[in-house]
Image 1: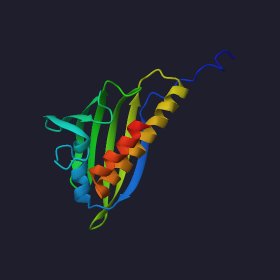
Image 2: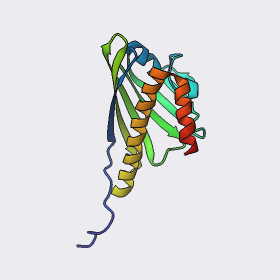
Image 3: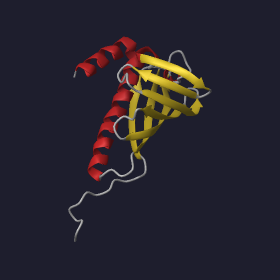
Image 4: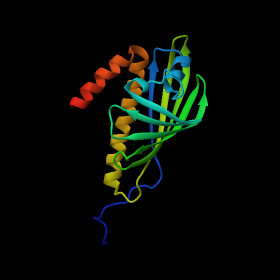
Length: 170
């Protein structure tokens, strides 16, 4: 009976998130926007990308200027798939690392569907309440990232800068 009202422990494995969007750009263009090695990489204009080694990058984004993201590409198939592991320094909340997988499906000459799958590993030892809060914030982040990618592909970087100005002010 003791412990019935105590904090429940959180799961220790990664939490999984998914988002899907239809985008008005070709699968080839979408792949270029996702590929950190490509000059078209979508976050290059709202931050900076340093090529550390083949398939390994250090990313800085204007929205979180005090953080650096170490990104290691794990899979890349042009116009079809781009996946990587990412870790922020310092950590963002209680998020330890993510594995992000972008699946691209052409739906026309200048259209595609993008599916983002994220596995997020959080600190071990959280309560279920803390874990649910981290999952909620990460889920919002995944949806926001895919929405921004879509906007960038269809409307350009200036639209993203406008959105991020509003987000910083909030």
